[in-house]
Length: 72
Image (cartoon, rainbow, N blue to C red):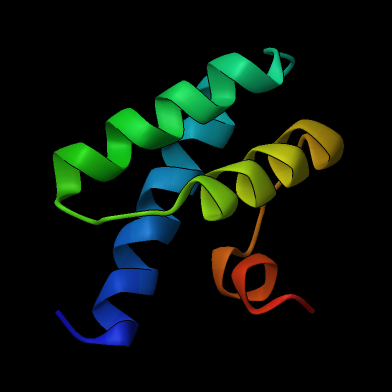
């Protein structure tokens, strides 16, 4: 899997979790990110999960996974 394929798969998971989990706790969001990543066959570190969960919880809107994971 290329880096671009990985980011696209993660973005699909983030989009799904964002739409389902608006207002959910960070633990719930993180668990759904883990579950989604497993379903699409993408390995994500605990740090990546935490970063994405934090942003999803804070923004309650569209999240750009590539931006979050690149640290910008």
